Length: 406
Image (cartoon, rainbow, N blue to C red; front, side, top):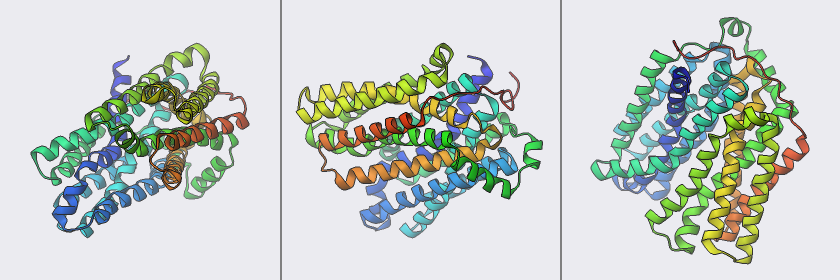
């Protein structure tokens, strides 16, 4: 791996992880936040809900802004906003203040996720883009495992406020890395040629592009199957199977490992078969395996071991689907990569939130209902992919070569 490529992965990966860390590291502290600020559990949860809302809204702001003004300015502005809001959260003396600063923090945290993906599109295309997106998603996906453990560790040594000091310090470190390693990757000519009207036209063009919308739906539905597992597995594995906190962490990690490991195969698969020929088997394989897991759960055969093995295989397919479908969706939209990235992220968050809400509304905390929701997401992704038909990827040169000197 070239030093510049590895550096890009580290810097952009950390920028992508800022928002998720502010979510997952904070989760263990909710009871202590409620007790400290004299509020109810629902009040403490509201500080999480507002973060999600502005985190989603921010996806639609930073993408077009990065096309209009370049990548660096929105990225720096969002990160500075996140640092300032983190300090405000750490110093909050009431739940109302905490909610207000969390709202601002979510808006700032959205910058890293959107702009980092646009920068990847500026720097790379095709297989190289898929490899770098895989590494970014690896960092992003490790957050649900590592961040709660870090949060628990911080709580063992200090108060919940220390969590916000820590995430603020991480974001401040990212500002230093932006200054050192991230030059402007959107050419000045493209910025001068971009207006607000053109951004609106770009959104219209993206939303009427059958390939972009179709592949974004495939990505969103497939990833929703993982979000459903995240939301429901604590109840299923702990209540139905009686797993302890440590046992649950291990069971969850096994599925996450498959997801992460498969991502690293995308570079080889893309070179060997071509990205356009990888996506369809991966989506259909994901749907078939999750369908088998539903049949196994419904019949009650194999128990937790059988379901775990099938989920392991299924989320391995998902590790291929996410970065490859993102590359294919944005392949023809390099000139408006920021806008395309923001729309993709917003649609993914909206679809995931909808599917998680539906799984909760119609679920009963049982394994069968959880796996049925996962299989439903996978099946819908396969239907969209089938309707979309074969994908033809036209390779394009990246707009820039790398961050800094090689």
